[in-house]
Length: 314
Image 1 (cartoon, one colour):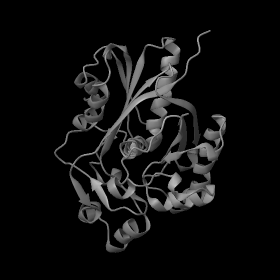
Image 2 (cartoon, rainbow, N blue to C red):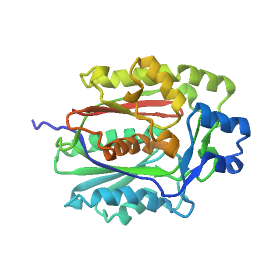
Image 3 (cartoon, rainbow, N blue to C red):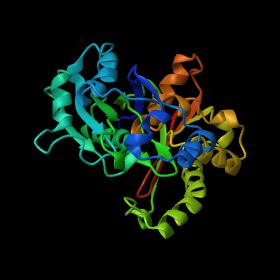
């Protein structure tokens, strides 16, 4: 029997050049002065990347084109998976995954979208890519996972009292031959009690926030254990950028140094839906802080509620 080793072979990210202060969203998002203070002073949000003139397909293709420039044979990409949070990112007659496939010149690839896990959909898409590649039994094949979206309406631009959405995208090339950052484990927990979060009832919202930190910590620890590791073996955690305060509570819950969780992009970009963990990984790489042999955890939470962690590297 052949031995397959799933891995993220390459990853790239993109954010629009245009940056705005969260104060500039007050009118559009109907944020009052007190709410704005909470977002900035408590949650650590400051800037967002938003470009109203940038089409969604251009946002998505930017990191994918950069990644594919280093791929000598695109015909080996068997699947293109577009992961997004917002259920409807385009009019009903437009299949964004197929449009992206055509833009990238991957006409031979099977293209589809993953969205049911909300902001945890990016990690789910990587896991789905692994399962599909394993089913082929061909280590030469690849899957391209792309994440990103534009927060075009208020309901998908703000989580009241929690976060504000910016624009960002990422692309990952997945294989099963072990070339790249090995995928050590994937753990996910679904808590359907919070399925109706738009809008949530006050009672559901209170309970969700009361159990949030412990649930994130539970899934993180489970993924690390599945990888045969301990928390001390993790070099960095790349989180979703919902805010600083929730991750500071998690840092206390885990009793780890604050620098273990990469939070530098929260004030820079805000919450970029399910692209965040990949954006953070690329940012740390660009800072020259990724090292061969180190182990990293990608963590995300989707309203609904879905808690997910993927351990890579080593």
